[in-house]
Image 1 (spheres, rainbow, N blue to C red):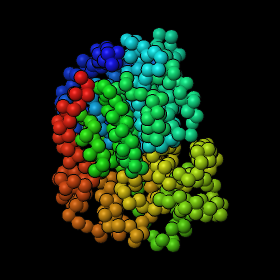
Image 2: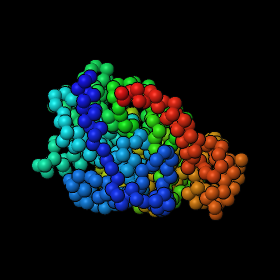
Image 3: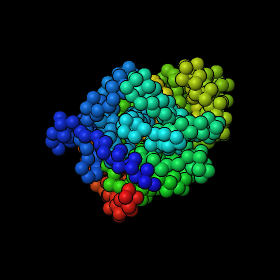
Image 4: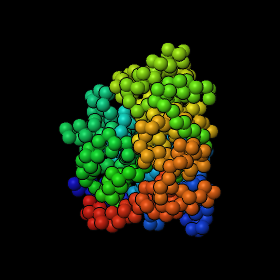
Length: 486
């Protein structure tokens, strides 16, 4: 315990400081930058936004790698999230898929690992220092690849210490993971199941872990990993910084954040893309398949087709094949190798259409998607937002709705369309209650938010109640927080 505290005290002496040009920004200047990038923030003493990577004080290898990848400017979520995370604050990030949030939590973690090695190198079985937990193997592999890409670039410089990372997921030989742990590891990317297994068997510990990222938290809660996540947090022995990313903020996430985060800064860059053309079609259930074929004619490939059930994915796939469409399918019932093969040939352009369940809406990145078709409208509006977020710039998202949809779901869909300045079909326009928007031309004219009942915002920008609760929670749990750090 003394050794752990010594390591903690030494590392605490290394702190990120905003450059003078950034700290001298006035409140008005900061708000102008945030407004330009459509960033909403909430919290105490929010660090100022930074619009270039150089001022974020990243090491030279990382800056060079960013330039090689053509990443010359931070995305909106990175403009605000990176300064918050680098300053050591707990953070809740609300951002859609493809917004650049992975780099927002990966780069500070690598920077922290480099600093740690300079001051007190890891030896033996120490580590990890940083931990990323996400709901699926595919998403974990994607994040791990990003980590490895930027860690590898530091290894090419002799002046920089060696940073080791590990992928901790099921379906991978645990012996290979244990070999990495024997040499010490700085960064671990994991899924809840395999991570819980290794912690319960004392094959890994979090004694030195001080940076925790929970990505796609709403998805983890939907899959029933809340207990696993809370058990994981109980394994931390010392101070930690917690970063929570979620595209939506349902009650489970609010409750979780209240109990586990301390005075977090909330960064919201919106969820439904204004660049995506959203088309909603009311169809009869028996007409869906012909409408699907017609929808495929709207754009050239590649196209994503989403369905709610595995059985329907298989039916759609067989139907498209019978009509001569080059299609592949992916869902949770298929083996890992089969899924990876389907994804790879779709990405390579060898197939035009990928039919999938929600596993694809959050776990994979696809460049240049022209069209997303929601064969089924999901009951939860956050799932709809995730799916249309797969579209590329100026892509099209077509959604089939039927009379089976609940009125609540349709009202939420209407709110999303209105906020994103999309055409509202007559079947949705006829729906109304006191929660709907009353003026289209002025974004600030609302009756009541459909999510929290407050004024001046709508369902997709509904952070007020959640933020108030989280701030209250921060104060309630402040004593527990500092007890854990002493």
